[in-house]
Image (tube, rainbow, N blue to C red; front, side, top):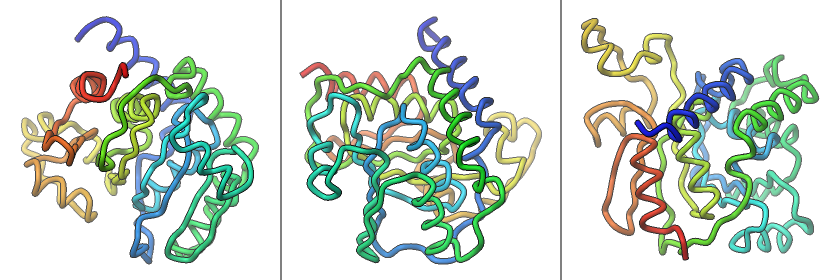
Length: 255
């Protein structure tokens, strides 16, 4: 593993630790939206991170429209819809709701789809914002600024856990290149799922897959591991953050 990637993984681990592992485990929502939620955000935004954590905790998917600073692909659409370039911005095509403010979005997701009270940890909006800000600092602002790229004809698909250090690197590249993608939440339901597949195999530890996306990925790729990228434009599919980043740069970057 090249030093640059090793250093990126180390700082990404630090970002996860800063958030104390939020956005890893899931208690799936009681109701699932018929059409994907649409989220306009950028990876390095502390407030956007909170919404992505809630998506993981509720096991909800979202079509992500990356809006990094200096981006021209989706930022104008947010101004057109909501009147200002502020992020995150959620569009729910199932209810017609559109909203800014991470705390409002998180509360909406738990109320509308979780069908349960907002967990206590989410009621300290200021503390969550501060610790999320430190996570952004840990990554040096990666996933915050746009870079030249070619827009794909169709959105890509990414199986991801919000606080996975490796999935974060893939999302950062998708964001910087302004590549839209369907975010497939892969939150864990039990501690044993935190062990990498090779370790579970060596320990002969069988883990029953309990969520739809995890079952879907296992059936498709033969194992449950993130990140996993699917590009319907080229037919390419792959694990491993470093491989995904190289693929995205080679296929869409530098235009």
